[in-house]
Length: 305
Ligand SMILES: Nc1ncnc2c1ncn2[C@@H]1O[C@H](COP(=O)(O)OP(=O)(O)OP(=O)(O)O)[C@@H](O)[C@H]1O
Ligand SMILES: [Mg+2]
Image (cartoon, rainbow, N blue to C red; front, side, top):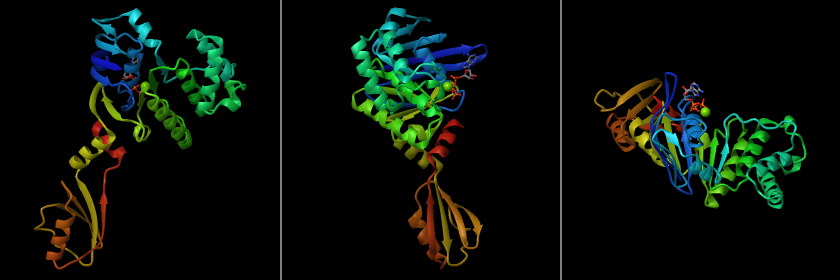
C-alpha cells in the first residue's frame, strides 16, 4: 500500500527525513512510532504531496507518485481519491454542524447527494456523534473533534487511512473506542497507517510497529517481537528476599543489596532456578521472588536512546 525508499526532506539545516525506508502491506494496521520531532508528520505530509522531499521514491496504492525529485500529479490525484487523511493539527469549521461538515467534505469528493447523506449518517453513528449531529462544532470537546475528523477521513470509504497522532487528547475511553474503529477498518480489509509518540496508543491495535528516530526507521516488527528482543537485551531483574544474609562473592551475577535480606539480581537470561540453587548452597532460602520485565515505555525509551 505504501512504499517509501530513501526519502530525504530538508528544512533549512534540519534533515527531517534522512533516508527513510518504509513498507506498509495491504490490510494491516501499522503504528508509526517516534518521539517528538522524529519526522512522523513530515513523512505523512510527503506521502500526500503536501511537502516536497529532496530525493527518494514514494509509491501509494501501486502508483509511483514521487520519483527523481518530483511528484507525478496525475498519479497522486488518483491515489489520493482512495486515501483518507486525518491531519495532526486540523481545523474544523466552528459554525458548521457535524452533518454539514461531512456534507461539505463529501461534496469535495464529488459523492452524490443520497450517497453522501447515507454515508454521513453511518459515519456519525460509527464515531458516536449522531446525537449531536445538528450542534455547532465550535462547542465540541477535543475528543469530539478528533472523532469528527476521523469521520471526515472516512467519507470517501478509503482503502488506506493515514492518521497523524489521531489519539492525542483522547481520554482512555475515547482511545478504546478509537482502537475499535481502527480494528473494524482492518476487518473490512482496509489499511491503516497512523503515527503516535505514545507507545500505549499503538499497543493492542497494530500488526506492525515502525519506530522512526531522527528521520530514519530504526526498527520494524510486531509489538510482541520488539518486547521479546528487548527483554533479551535488557536482561532480567529479579528481586528476592532470603531468610538470612547471603554471600554473593562467588556468584556470577551482579547483585545489589537492597537492605534487610533483599537483593536485586541482574542477569542476561532467566536464572531463577540457578538462583534457588545458589541461595541453597549458602544455607539460605528464598522467601519471595519478583521478576521485573521492562515496560513497553522503558523499551521505547531504550530504542530512542
Ligand atoms: N515547516 C518546517 N520548517 C522547519 N522545520 C520543520 C518544519 N516542519 C518540521 N520541521 C522540523 O523537522 C523535524 C521533524 O518534524 P516533524 O513535525 O515531522 O516531527 P514529528 O515526528 O511529527 O513530531 P511530533 O511528535 O512533535 O508531531 C523537526 O526537527 C522539526 O522541527
Ligand atoms: Mg507530528
